[in-house]
Image 1 (tube, rainbow, N blue to C red):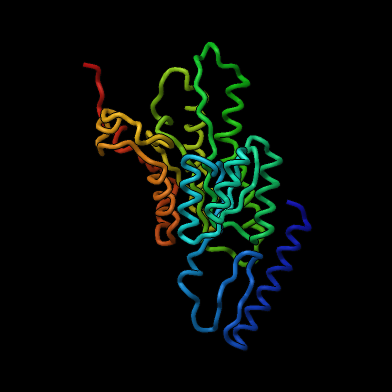
Image 2 (cartoon, rainbow, N blue to C red; image 1 turned 60 degrees about the vertical axis):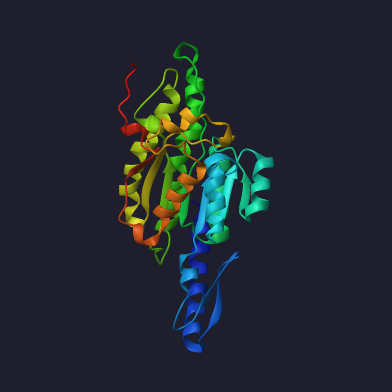
Length: 295
């Protein structure tokens, strides 16, 4: 990070510290912590709602699971920004939810870093990162090029390192530590089971699985927990068109919905759930526990 960025962080810290001293001297006062977050402080109490409101950044938030995550965190009154390559859908979700949209191709390292650093500058910090962006392009191994393989990893896996890496650099530069942090990576049950032609996708999700526990150890210094969620079959559209057999093959007797994953994200982000760390949580209706043989 540039030296002037760190210097500005120090100046902002000194300003917040001076404002806090004023509240101690004169009582209740509004202290602006970022252009878009106002926290009501007093020398006696701070509201529970304000304490729990978090600054959230989601990748791939314009459709499917990402859309559900953005919507649910906004409904829970968190401050949410998200990026996606689909500008039309992204702007629509932003209007519907009140979230802030950035058009970014996450495979573009410079663009993703620029977006994240801009949000850090605006918000002063980011409490929650949800690495959701991903593509699932399958093709026979004889028809899959190395370039195809690299492209999927550049979208599905590399951002899962880039964003926590930047957040760690930012947190390290802070004078007063933020005692809360969450990184949630969207994995897949395909990290441990496969179909033909899924080499790149399986590699990316296997990488997320392993990167999650590595990040959990490295980021613990800055009070950041890191977990992953492995969805099974999550139907993101035309749910009512599914067959009865689609549902009944699941031990829970239904196919999953994007909201099932969004709820798990919310659960992991609750402050009291900080003892869950470095884990991969499977949300698949029980399918990976079901022994299946062809009769």
